[in-house]
Image 1 (tube, helix red, strand yellow):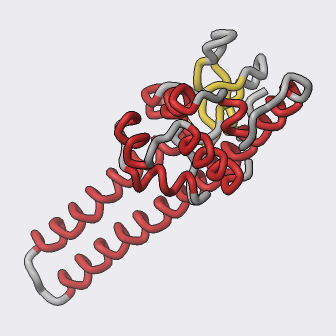
Image 2 (cartoon, helix red, strand yellow):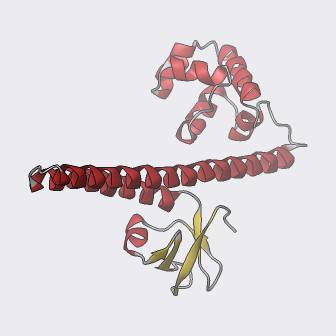
Image 3 (tube, helix red, strand yellow):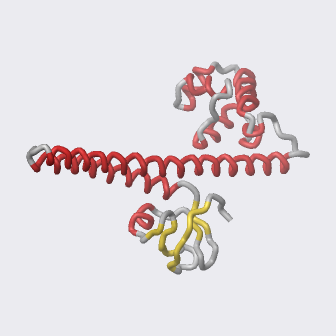
Length: 206
């Protein structure tokens, strides 16, 4: 999707409705700065705002995502292109999230090891044992928080695919948290066929 084209389209339709950025923002319950970012092509409206925005501008979601009023003749083609682009953007966002998950794991593990090493160094210097346990506790606390955050990313980024029936889905957090795993492959119950299998992480939904 062409963000600049969409932004210019929003600005054009807003002006046609004789609305200022501030007035449009007020009706949507957001700031005029957000509207300005849309119209300059720096960002796109959040999915939750698209329907009310389209209603205010008198356009369809397909028009909005195309950056132009879609005619009957090319409606299906534009719809298909917009859907494909949205899927592509989600896949790219999921890849970035999963990469961020790895980064969180590396940094939090390094911090935990650094705290353990520092505590051990203090012990060799004859310092009280409680200093070691304090540093270990700090390192472990941040590690556990980071792992919970990383696990949430793994849950929502992409999909899990059942090995038995091939169904792809986003599981509940509790299912991911409690599942045995090898890397990002987890032993879970498929909501489609009901079988428990080792389910791998995939980025595309079949």
